Amino acid sequence: MMIVRRMGVLAAALTVACTPALAGCGQTGPGGGGQSGASPGAPASSVKAYDINPVARDQVKDGGLLRWGLNEYPTNWNLNHVDGNLAMVKKVTDALLPSAFRSNEKGQISVSPDYVTAAKVTATTPKQVVTLTLNPKARWSDGKAVTWQDYEAQWKAMNGRNADYRVATTTGYQDIESVKKGGSDHEVVITFAKPFGDWQSLFIPLYPRSTNGSPDAFNNAWVNKMPVTAGPFKFGAFDQTAKTITINRDDAWWGDRAKLDQIVFRALESDALVGAFSNGELDTFDVGPSAPDYARAKGTANAVVRQAAGPDFRHLTMNGESAVLSDVKVRQAVAMGVDRQVIAQSDLQGLDWPIVLLNNHFFMNTQGGYQDNAGELGAHDPEKAKQLLDAAGWKLSGQVRKKDGKELNLRFVAPSGLQLTKSEAELTQNMLSKIGVKVTLQSVPSDDYFTKYIIPGNYDITAFSYVGTPFPVSSGYGQYANAAKDSKGELQWNANLGRIGSKEIDAAMNAATAELDPAEAIAKANAADKLIWQAVNVLPLYQRPQNVAAKKTLANLGARGFYDLRYQDIGFTE
Picture 1 (cartoon, one colour):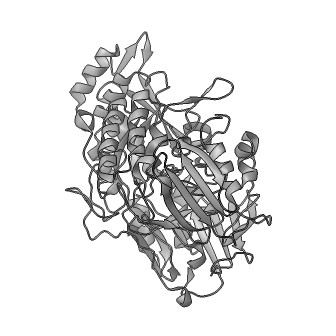
Picture 2 (picture 1 turned 90 degrees about the horizontal axis):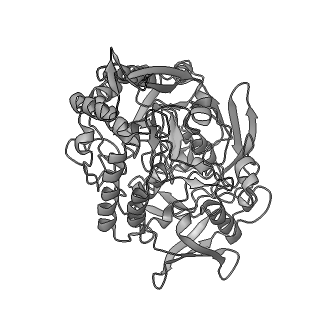
Picture 3 (picture 1 turned 30 degrees about the vertical axis):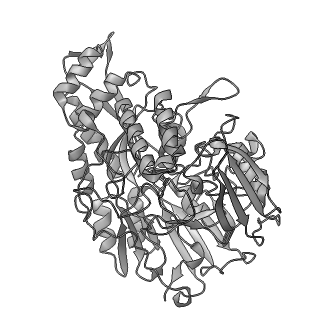
């Protein structure tokens, strides 16, 4: 499952998004170089930045149906909502919603000209001001123009001042002082209260002001609905029995006409996707780090597996609010009791991918800015783990440690149908048994995994992937940020699924996102990363390869790396 790092997204072979400190259009900051700055032992330079079978539009056939496999069936289609911050939601809504900016395969950012024709920093003193010029042709499917008011409404919903909006992240939006009309309805003037280097990570995507106008609309208007769109495709239908989402070419679209007539997204259990693909029922699906599925997909007639390096990583997440893991010493002991190298070897063997541990929460091994910040917590050290548990009051009693008569028992929640997570859980169970920690495996329905278990904190430990963006720091911010109180006084952790945070971590991350100098931003991000390692919120495992199975004739779709897909260009060559 994968989650998007927000600026990012969640999913069960889970994946989330990242951002670079950018001072101007087209400039790259930390991590923006894609394959540049690779550390020793990182994936070789032969690994592609992206692998999508790029084909010129005039060589792509007009018309046709694309059948796209998903490994979960989301219910909330607001990507900015904590329940909608899923990689599967992003796959669908990227075809339907505006984005102010887009990335190429190198992580270089530019405006998305169908929606924004120009973007520039128009002042840096006394305050940072960014001015966007909107494409006057852009319209919502309800006939209303896309204007500065949509940007203002999204800022107000996302800035964290009203915690009743259950946002995935407030990063960047919380630093904005005002969003105002410029010289026309199609000019947006954004004034920041303090500098924010990753300003090009904002408004990706943009929802209409009707969605952002109230907490009720924000939280509920996109549950099992897609009321308004503005893309090359428009919403067609949900079929909750067949678990399909259908989108159709939008003939009211003002940009390049979509090549495909229709896309049908079909959700299946992860272990059923490869079978459907091999049987000709799907045209593409995300294989993920599964060696058996990788081999079977590669062996399918007239098919390929497209592979690229991306800002995506596999990890273990611990719930800091669970009864046994609220003690940082116990979390640190678990980190030292797990042999990450063994898990990485088990996951990655047979995938034509280097087995290299990831020791940073913001930067991947292949990104500039990467440094090893794990320290002793990155080493497999069962003896030190035992000492930490002893110090925390958990004493060995037979095979399992106890404290106040209670066993040290961790509930490892895994989505059904995903052998990868099941294997990781079993390996973790075996490793932690050697330090006196019991691990109980709980398999849950894939569609419920995030919404009923991980997001509400109904677990002790789990494994999934975060899917990244070209913005390493601001996209990862929400995963490690402290909780905020809503109008009822209840803590809202938003995208921080580990439910572990501190004022010190927030301050360190804020210093990194406020830094406009790329080199300084990298240094400050790594300082924040060292604090996150000590808190043991997320335990990184490895940079996840993007493996996407596709028909050979499928063009402009596959393992995208940093590249933002142009859904209007996707189609078949014959």
